[in-house]
Image (cartoon, rainbow, N blue to C red; front, side, top):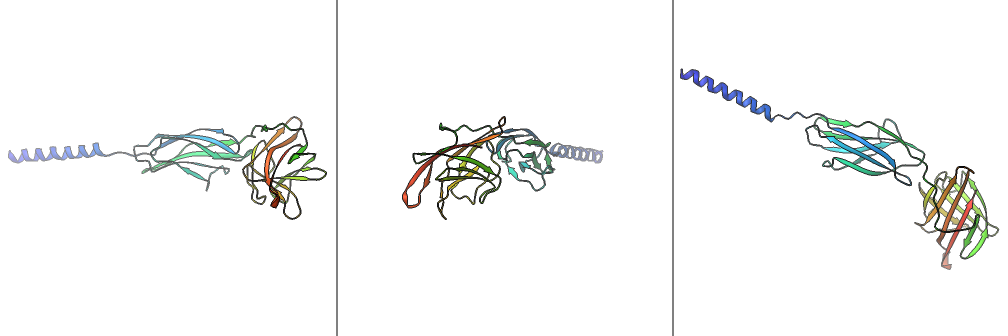
Length: 254
């Protein structure tokens, strides 16, 4: 009888151990993520939002965004967020008129899960309004007003697009990294190193042209009705070599 009781106690202990082990076992499945929206955020940028809706029962070891112009997103840039985050809202650089693809990912011990892919074409930016009032097709160089003829060309010695403001005694060249679009551009003094959203402005003077200083603004507006482009800049500073600094403004339509 004692032997049966011992066997019964042993069976109860074994069953309790198994049940306790089952209660402690955690089943981890893939996490779940979603991409909320992609919206235009201004010159050369978009705003992307995403959410980690479920950890899948495991610890998150990776959470981020993949984006690029290749639809399959192979080898595309990634933005990694904190593994403790459950959502994000991030500004991503993106070129106007191009189509981009975006998806969110999250990783736990079960593997990596991906959201659906959002396709988004970056629209043309709105026309930019300059803060100064100028007559059309003029350049005001250090207080002297000059009438100019404005031309645009698809190739230039610097950049890949050039707008020229040609006066009888002075020429102003504006170099763009590509075909200009609506928006506000920042000036760079080195015309051989301009990127999206930047321009370089020079006034030829022999072999060493004067160039407008870094970090100033040029405003560009396209009129879709008349098919014309207006470029405006207000009191930009440039260095005249050993003769000090000067300012130049201009407005030209072509």
